[in-house]
Image (cartoon, rainbow, N blue to C red; front, side, top):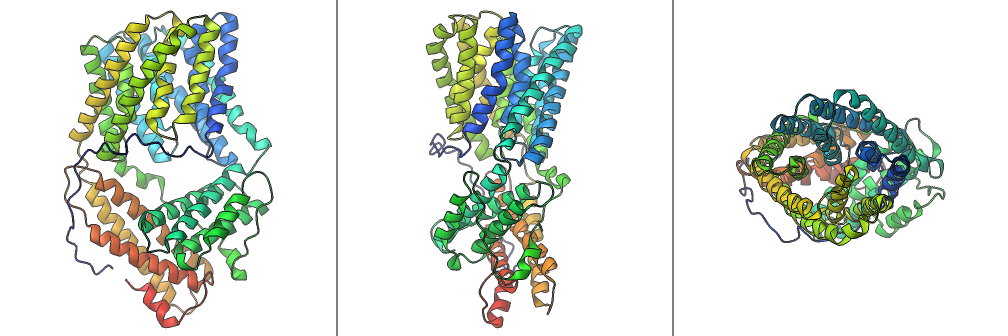
Length: 554
C-alpha cells in the first residue's frame, strides 16, 4: 500500500472558466466517415419521399438514418452488433414517444416522458460506451417524436419507416468492410503507437508527462478492446497485437523507446498495405497476445447515478420552463439540457457555453440560408443534407462549431411538415437554447455527486491491490508468462481508471478535498512496477536484480 498519509491536499476547484472553451482542436482522423455515411443514409429515403410527395414523413425516416453516425470506431464484427442495438434503441425510444403522443395531448406529461427517456438513453449510452454521438441524437429523435401530431393507428407505419431506414444505415456503415476489413483496428493501433511516442518524447519526466502517460494508456486500452472484439484471431490481428505490445513497452520505459520508430509504424498502418512485423524481444512473448483486463459492465453503473438524476431533472425542468414561456417546441429546451451532461460540473459548464454559442450562431446561419431552402422541396432536402455533412465535419474540432450546422438543420427539418415563419422559429430556438442551458446547468449543480471522492478512494484501493499482486508475482521464481501478463495489464487498467476517476472528481462541486498526493504516489509506484514487470517478461533490456526489486516497491 502507498505509505503517503491519507490527508487531502487541495480542495476541488469551483471556478467556471471561459478560457479555452471555444478553442478549436484538430479534426478527427475519420471525420469523413460519419459525414459521408449520414448523407448516404439520409439522401435515398429523403428523395424517395420527395418523389412520393410525402416529405411530412422525413422526420421518421431520419430517425433511422441518423443511426449511421454511430460505431465508426468499432471493428466491423463489433460494429454490426452495436448498430443493431442502436437501431433497436432508437426504435424503442421513438415507439414510446409516438405511443405517448397518440394517447395524450398534455404537454406536461409529454415533457415528463421525454425527460425519463433522456435519462435512460444517457445511462445506456454511457454504460455501454456507445458514442460518439452518444445519447444526444437518440434524445433528439425521441423528443421530437413526442410533439409530432399522432394517432395510434399511425404508429406501426411510422416505426416501420424508421426501422427500414435504420436497416439501410446499417448497410451503409458496414459497406467499407468490403474495401478495408481491418481499418478500425489499424486506426486504434496507430493511435496507441502515436500516443506512446508522445509520452516517449517527454522522457517520462518532461513537461506534460503525466497527461501524456494517461493518454497513452487510455489509447492502448482502446486498442486492446478493439482487437479483442474482432472475433477469431487472424494473422493481421496478431501483427497488430505485437504493435500494441510495443506501445505498452514504450509507456513502461519511455527513456528506452524510439519515438520515431513508433510513429513510423503508426504511419504504415494507413491504407491497406501489410502490417509491419514488430518482433517482440523474446519468443515466448507471442503467448501474451490476446490477454486483456476489462471492467465488468455493471461496475460502470454506480458513477452514472448522479448523471441520470441530473438528466431526468434538468430535462424535465427545462421543458416545463419552456412551456411556461409559451414556446411551442419545448423539446428543444429538453434536448439542450440533455446535451449538457458530462462527467462532472466543470465539463458540463463548458458544454453549456459551447451549446449556447453554437446555437446562436447557427440561428444566424439559418437566417442566411432560409431563402435558398424555400426555393422548393428539393432545395430543402439538399440544404439538410449539406448541414448534416457539415456538422460531422466540424463537430470533432469543437462541439460549438458542429452546433453551427446542427441548428439550421434542426430548424429546416420542422419545415418538412409545412412552411414555418422564419422569425418565430429563430426566436423560439434561441429562447429554448438559453432556457435549456440555464435550467439544465442549475439542475447539474443542484444534484450533487458527493460519492465522487468515495470512488477515488476505491480506485486507489484497486490500484494498490493490483500493484501488490503484480509485485508478489515478480518475487516468485517462476510466475508463468500468462499470469504475469494478466497482472501487468490488470495493473495498467487500474492505473488508467484511477487517473480517469481522479480527473472526473476534480471537476465536481460540493465534496470533500481529494487525496491528490496519494493518487500521484500510487501512480508513480504503479508505473515503476509496470516497468519492472515488462523487464521481467523480457520486453525490456535486463537490469540489475536489486534495481528490479526496488522498482516493484512503492
